[in-house]
Amino acid sequence: MGVSILAERDRVSLDNGMDLRLLSALEILQARREAEELVGEDRERALCSNACLLARALEYTQGHGPVFSDGRAVLAALTVEEISALASRWGELHRSCNPGLTVSEEELENVKKNSEPTRPDGCGGGC
Image 1: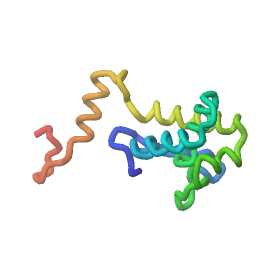
Image 2 (image 1 turned 90 degrees about the horizontal axis):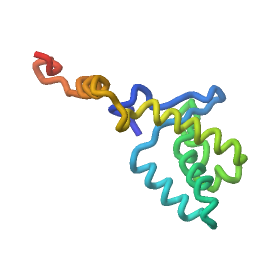
Image 3 (image 1 turned 180 degrees about the vertical axis):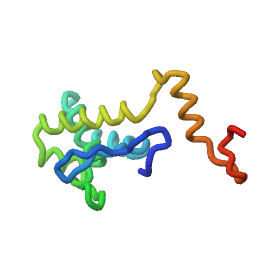
């Protein structure tokens, strides 16, 4: 995913040579579908969903390549506590970067103003 239109940043460093990055809508759907294939019992759903999300969101800082090939690899390599902590960290990044429905009118106007393409005459819409 490229830099989000609304987000001020699209990744956070874990200070260990790895980053967590925001995911596109398509990547979220893919993670959900993969998790459905891994779930054996309903109580496993959250863990499998988080593992599949992390498989897409966790990248090496250098080169931005994936740390894990898929959710099954995450489940095999990390503890439940590690998956939970990393998924929580990703959730914090997601909430801090995506305004959601609770955005104030002033923040919304700022987003709209900053996402307005510059016209050919160089005016950003305020002329």
